[in-house]
Image (cartoon, rainbow, N blue to C red; front, side, top):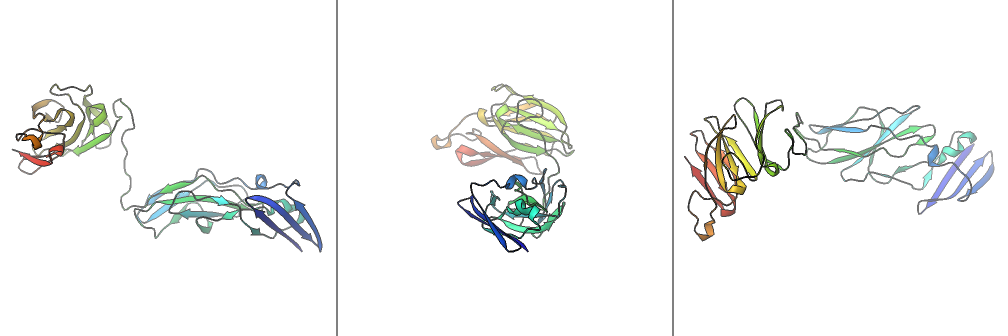
Length: 297
C-alpha cells in the first residue's frame, strides 16, 4: 500500500512522507523533488460567451486529460493557491505527481467538458472563470482567467475602434438611425459625424476639423433624425444646433452662447446635448448647463 502526504506552510514545501509496504521515508524542503513543473499544462484558448441567464465556456483539449475542473466566482481573481493536501498516489513511479493544487477561491464544477454551458445565472452579474485539467500526473495550474456577463441582449454587431480615420472614433457620444436603418454617430472628440449602413459599413463623414463655420463642429454630442428625413445635431462646443439632410449637406444653423442665470434669451445655449423630435417634427433640446429644455417648431 502506498500513501503520501504533503504539508506546506507559507506556500513552501515543508516535508513529504512516503510509506511503501510499511517502509517510511521523508524528504525535506532542500531535497530534489519534481513539483509543479511535472504537472500537466493548463488548458489554452479559454473563452466565455454570454447568453440569456447562461455563459458557455470553451477551451482546447489537453492530451491525456481524464477530466476538467471549472472554477468560478463573481469577483476577479479566481486563482489556485497551494493548500494542505492529502492525496494517494497510484505507484512508486508516480511519487513525484503527489504535489497537486486545489482551489481556495471560487466554486468548483468538477468533471466539466468543453463546451460547458453554465446556466441558471443572474443576468447583469459578472462571472469569472478558470479551467484546470486533471491527468494521471495531477491537476494542472489554472488557465488564463476569462469573464462574461449573462444578458437577455446578445451582441449582434460592433462598429469601429479608437482612432481618427474613417470608421474610427474618439469618444463617440450620440447615435441615431434613419428609416432605412442607416446609423449616424456623433464622433465627439474627432469633431465629426459618421454615417454607416445597417450592416456597419462606413458610408460618409462630415466635419473633422474643429470650427465654428456652418457644416463644421466643435465637440458635437447629441443628434436625431427627424420625421422629415433631416438630421439635427447638437454642436455642443459651438452652442448651436445644426440641421442637415441625410447626405451631409448643411441646411440651417442657429443658436449661440447664453447663460440663463444671467438672463439668457430663449434660443441661446450653454452646452446643448440631448435631442428628440415628435411626430409633428418639433425639436426638443436639452440645454444642459442652462438646466432647461427648449422646444423648436
